[in-house]
Amino acid sequence: MTPVNLEAVQGNVLAGFNTAHQVFLGLRLDNDADLAPVRALMAALAGQVTSHAEVRRDRELMKDSANNIGRSWLCVGLGQALLKRLRPDVTFFSKSFRNGYAARRFFLQDPSQPDDWRFEGSEANRLDMLYIVAGNDRGSTQEAAANHLVRAAEAGFARVWQEDCARIPGDREHFGFRDGIAQPRPALGHGDDPDNAQAPGQFVLGYPNALGDVPPDLFSGARLFSDAGSLMQVRRLVQRPDAFHGFCRDVAARLAPGWPGLMAEQVAAIIVGRWPDGTLVDTNSDDLMAALDELDDFDFSVPAQATGCPTGAHIRKTNPRRGPSDQSVPDHQRFLRRGIPFDNGPGDRGLLFVAFQSDPELQVDFVTANWMNSDSSPGVGHDILVGTTPGPRAIDVGRNGTSVRIEGDDNAWIVPNGGAYLFVPGLPALAALEAAPGAVNATMLSMVGRVRSGLFDLTQRSRGL
Ligand code: HEM
Image (tube, rainbow, N blue to C red; front, top):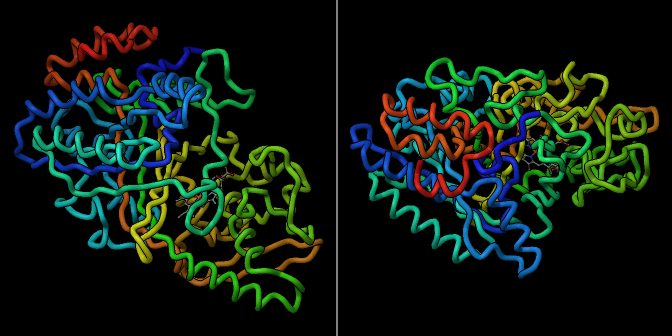
């Protein structure tokens, strides 16, 4: 297997920043703005964006010191409109990226109205660039974001959205559940891949995917431009914990006559598929605790685990784990989740959901439209937690040979108000945006061997290639 060039891939994609604080900075460029300063900014950013290799090196350093990276990390994504101006010769295969989230929302059954969105709701808050600035100290992360904003403004960008996000202690999301446990493990080809690692091309363009192909990432344009890049979906999901927990209390009261002792917390755990601490639910057991050494080490081909976790539970709708209705290529649809909670006070707290993959149509969009919003696939039942299917929704819960039904109305506890797809370029591609298209092809060609062989390194990067 060709090892993944870890100096070229952005660090938030495969390693995940996972820092205590992250500032999301959404930027827009006027349609008639001069591109020369933008190109210069791209070259500068290629020296500032944090690569996978840098994240790894910093993490090694952190093992010996306080839990602080001491500096901020940066991830940059580019929107379709800006990319079209910088590289008119390049057209991405991905429909989601080309058409944008506002157009995709019908397919995804996102019921929200773009007028209410914090970003990408209209031309005025279009995301041409998205910075994710990450660090473990709030003040210095915000300061770094402010500095990035100054430089972006000098190149002509205006801020259209900013979100200051922070992890909740215990890695909880706002309903109180531990999040970010289950992740696919990409095979990086550097000798330390776990047994069940997934083909890197599932997450990074230019490498073989689960089928063994390097899929055509671009309709047209220099093929290498997309190499080492990834496609991000970001969604702003406001959560209403009171509505969710109130619903769980009502269900527990309604079902209590047939299920003595059923608690609201259990109902919530059944809907998620895990207890708040991450333990897998087991509806056949009175305490509902399944003893697993590793929170992610289970599989629905194992009968006890398959019968104890409802097919409509959120974690099972989004990842059937080789259960009876899994896809023919198991795990083909998985993506890397890099979301983080935001909290602007009651009424405006939730999850900034972030997914990285090479093909959103087959990954996050597929899971959303075909599984989360289906009552029959990959298993029977709705994803009551996050799914947005209109009309009555229900999960059937197997319990020691009998079946109990949890019925829910329209999802009243998650209110989406923003969504976007961005291309997260590899560092060589970002550097190459310095040049106009004609010249870019030559630059890109000269880069071919270096990117592929892993010789593209920080020294070249700091010279801006
Ligand atoms: C506010 C909205 C959401 C909440 C509160 C939420 C909550 C959770 C929780 C508590 C878990 C279990 C912890 C873990 O395995 O990491 C989980 C897992 C997961 N969620 Fe969500 N989620 C939300 C939105 C979404 C969306 C929009 C998707 C997109 C399809 C999604 C896909 C997944 C996937 C793929 C898993 C891992 C399943 C597995 O592999 O076991 N989630 N989510």
